[in-house]
Length: 163
Image (cartoon, rainbow, N blue to C red; front, side):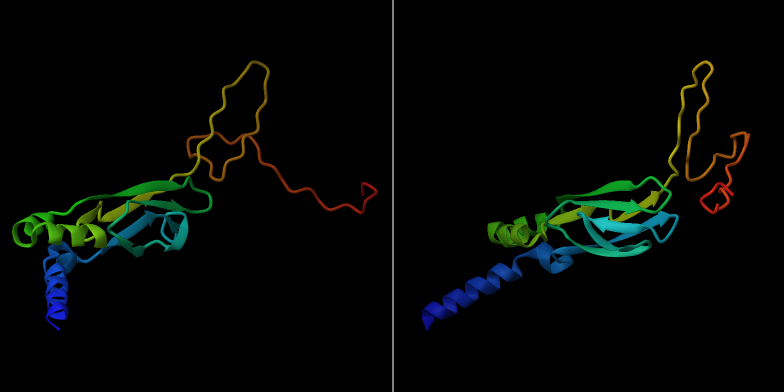
């Protein structure tokens, strides 16, 4: 029985000295927004939702967030983990046991930045003109500064004999 009591005291002291885990947990909420809204959010190559979105992420790892929408260039952002300031509380009050518990649980870290915002842009086209050349460039959205010189039309359906 005394052995069981020693083990219980050791476990309680380990858990209670993990300052960062107690104060802010092993996961963190990160707000993700975009312009335009309703863009697709993928975190670490896993579909997560649409913007605006709040993701609950493990503090233990860095994360790659990809924001995409039809007709726009995707944005890829990185959340990096940094040592939390709570580690100082562990060193002072919990010693190595507290630091070890927080390192294992992920509570030792903080993700940065804590908010992500992406302004998605339309793809741009560039053409290097050559003498006596004619180019057709297809883009999802025309730039307002471009001069319109023509427009394609859909062909009428025929009966197979050219009529």
